[in-house]
Image 1 (cartoon, one colour):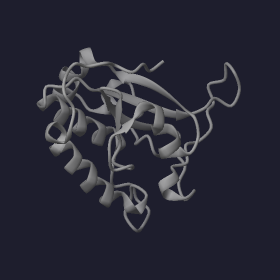
Image 2 (cartoon, rainbow, N blue to C red):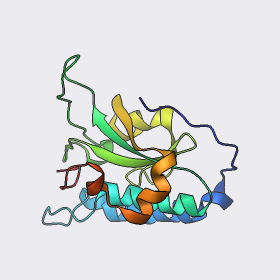
Image 3 (tube, one colour):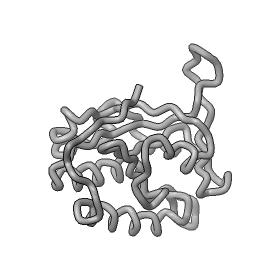
Length: 161
């Protein structure tokens, strides 16, 4: 289960300027449902989350990489409901999504700004979701330097497919 990490680092516009610029710029490029007009995926949520984590590390912060999935269809089931991002009005559904989390904020360019962990699910998907830390704070530095999301046990195809 994902828990909110507390930090004694300051967070504010002066601390997050490069991350905020990245979120805003990337938000604009995601207008076509993470793809090009022909429907081919051109973006990877895992690689975006890794880029954001790298920027936060440069600011001396300790982020984590978190997977997002729909709620389980039945207790004990491995099957989950698909994620349907509010932004895309039902045009796309995903089996999973990957985001960067730091100091209780979710950094998802689909939203375009950091959101409190408690508000993220309803803002992004209009429903409760399951969130699980995939790359914890104590492994994030090594991860962003040496690995891709796929090498950490994730599917080799983008989470959105």
